[in-house]
Length: 77
Image 1 (spheres, helix red, strand yellow):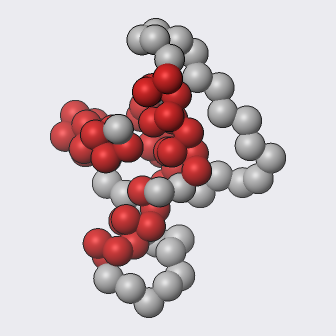
Image 2 (cartoon, one colour; image 1 turned 90 degrees about the horizontal axis):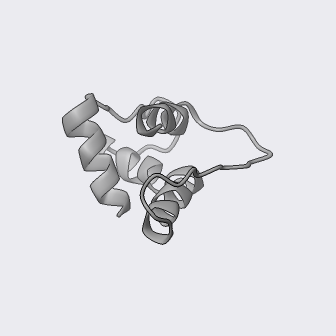
């Protein structure tokens, strides 16, 4: 489900992962993969799998959200 959401964001909303916050010395594709598995995106895909369509999904987090997850969440909502 997570990869399906990311692909839909890329094709329909023009989403491009923001990898500027990844400080590891790895190539761009690995940076995108690392961002793809953040907890916010995982919880959204889990919510889509376990709720009926149209159900409100609320994410509560007491830490900061990275710029990429913030952008993806805005586009999903």
